[in-house]
Amino acid sequence: MPNGQRTRNIYNPDSEEPYKVSRSKIEMFTECPRCFYLDLRLGVGRPSMPGFSLNSAVDALLKKEFDIHRAEGTAHPLMRAYGIDAVPLAHDSMDDWRNNFRGVQFYHEPTGFLVFGAVDDIWINKKGELIVVDYKATSTSATLTLETEHRQPYKRQLEVYQWLLEQNGFPVSKTAYIVYANGDKDKKAFDGKLEFNIEVLAHEGKNAWVEPALVNMKKCLSGELPEPAAGCEHCEYRAAAAKYEAE
Image (tube, rainbow, N blue to C red; front, top):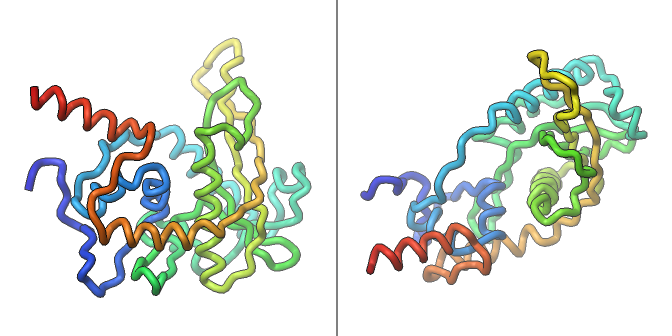
């Protein structure tokens, strides 16, 4: 087996065992079916990215902060500031739902996929609906919005989580939120600390696309290697490298 090619969790179209598919793999299929096929069917993944340690630190601290209010059954000040009538959800499964290797899971029988995704947080409103919440960190002077092209995956991420919770029988609010920590670069000095401005961005989820995507993912993995998606930088790199290596 060549270096860089994995042997675990390779999709076998003849297997009757449930096949685990993460939320990030659904996103990969949405971006480029060829990259998806190479990864899940042939074990040739995209190059790994370095971990974003500062983002992880922001996630961890936000979770600790919201967990204080979860334990007390109270609304976080951000909820009050943005007029969100909810509190952090206290549920026995929260630790599993947040775990990157377990997450919220649902077995999709038509495809045989065990779909899962790890949430950052879930709130609950007065109607008993679960509210999907994700934490993000950035540092920009531009107005924060989810309407830019590079943030469309954030919307799909929220919608997959909403779909998973709905499939598990929970009432789910169509409104999801991103708690965005924006690093302030306008301070006169660093002084050994980075300060953040926190904003809450709302998104009205539309997850009707999820199930058709799963069916198409199944068809993709059961067929031949697809053509590259237009503009896929990974496929463009592989094609350019193969051309010059052949020469």
